[in-house]
Image 1 (spheres, one colour):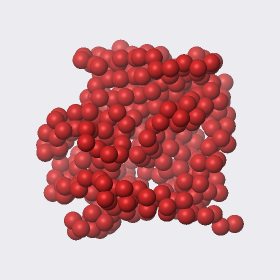
Image 2: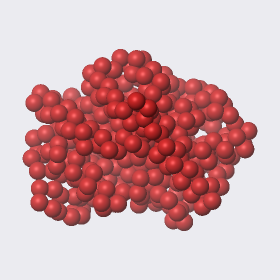
Image 3: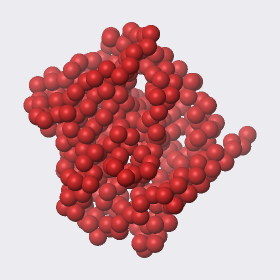
Image 4: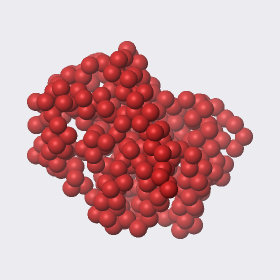
Amino acid sequence: MAIPTHLDDLTGLFTDAALHFLGPRPRDTREQLHVYEGLSVDELFPAPGVVPVATVSPRWQLPGLASEDVVFRSTHEPLAPGYRRSFESAYDETRTVYARRLRGRGHEERPRILYIHGFMQPETVLEEIGMVGASALRMGVEIVQVQPAFHGRRSPSGTIFGGELFWTADLVRSFEALRQTLHDARTLLSWMLAEDPRPVGVAGLSLGGALTLGLTCLEERFAFSMPIIAHMDLAAMVRDAPVLHTMRRQLAAFGWSPDDFRGFVERIGWYGLRPRIPADRIHLFAASSDRFFDRDVVDRMSRDWGLSDVRWYDASHMGFLVHLPSVVGEMARIVQGYADARPTSPVAHDVATAPRAAGGR
């Protein structure tokens, strides 16, 4: 049965029109990309050196469900000198990390989840309660949802859409946003393990799923990983995703083809990344007719990584949303398996005794 993909294309047309007519014009920063080449993985994506001092504030409470803000200062250090100046001035808002912690009833003895949302997701209260909150209740877990760089409250003043600066033809800013989000998520993981040594899994949807896969390749402290409708081939994502048509057009205007972008991604060693947790702890959810994350790319990644737990749904990328109740049910069963096994974090002690950052806010 053919799966309609028009929702994927309509979403792309709407996003493309909004970014084309209302979004900022990116700078051509290709000549600065050499600063990322020739570095080791640990130099390109350094582990956080400190546990941050985080401010935890109550947001709201419902029967069986409570929400809190977790806020701390990002310790991300840009590699590109030109971007570093913007990062310290014009982009100051994105230097503060915001996360929402939702605790469902009965979470105290169960693994927790660090969750990353999708590209330009607005993070409305309805979404927080109806999606993340409902998932926390269904799974009986604590979910800590981190905002990626340039999204939500981390959007610089003057931006129209949350996330509009995250992934654009300004390749230095885009790659630094990727580096920062991965670093901030790992810093949040350090804070979570220092506060409570219970195991932490990582999950994410769409762009958040791609970031989840990246974290799976950088961070052995995660107990399990649940990426949803994503792969981590950056060049394939730029080539295929309907919402990135403006980016493709602007890169072409700069003189770069998709193959040129792929060459850069290859030179920084991104395609050599492999999971740092066992393959049987990676639980991938995928859509068979996804126009954002091509099935062939997902299949190839699954084979290369030796993944045995790939759950396919007959859906497009946007059409996958109707399957979310079923997906959350599957995630609940996965989490229950780890709860029954009562795994422990082998590095929780090391993280808990690491130095703490000063000046959190």
